Length: 373
Image (cartoon, rainbow, N blue to C red):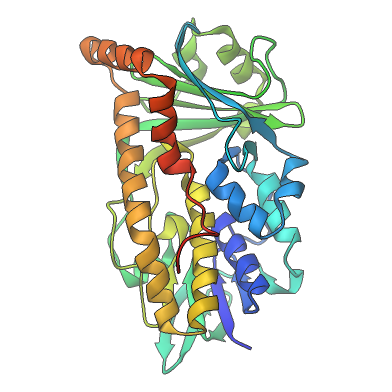
């Protein structure tokens, strides 16, 4: 049986292993962490990624943990409604859940013998028609193909492209999951609030929880909650109800799109090749799309380098476009100039719901199960 080694046990790597195994290939995951801890914050699974979960027969399981998002709202920092759009009629529902719930669901769907922890990649080489991966624990693994799904600081990418660290786009992101749902927030509502150089996002995460994220043009080292004093009341309610130790802080980073995703019997997947700023909530979703398109390419072309190159060709354009759109969206969202913010507010307020919905459909209506391979 064809052997495929996947470096990285995150959402992209686990989804790829599941899709490949269901397509009849022997895929094994090699993760650097000594254990897959249930850490992280909320993650949005938009309809484009829900179609992947439906294909691998995990959608119903996900609904046990997730909150369904039926409407999106854009508001100012005082809670004044600027615009809204209903997404309840989408072919696949949009949901949000804790990242650990998604990762655990994917992990439990795989044979545990195919997940290898405490395997930090040192190097990979191709010898003939075999890939050899060497790990810091002294193990070496041979496989027919190697997939680099090891995240934004990918070791596979570093050896292959060696283009340094991702680019910081000048603002900081905080993420958290609160055990409460403020009374002022209706069920099924996702919202984004705009201020001067600051934003705050809120969405249902299921099981009575609410996920939130914040962005600011600063690397605040003291009490970051001071940034949102005086904002719409549920903002402070959520922050203060979230255990401080569970709040994640990162820079907003991405990379310029790169057409070189792989060579020979190796390719890259997810954040390892196309990391994006979090403005569209598409990081994990794009990795899941990658995983399914990769598996379908193997199904069509068999165990061959042609399958890898076809996958790369099919995925490059879409991921490049979304990376740029997300970067631009973040730039607009982080505006500080009063004139520019006034123009943003006017545009948000006057945009017809149909126009907003069509713009979103370009991102969310992609179905990896129907892409012509």
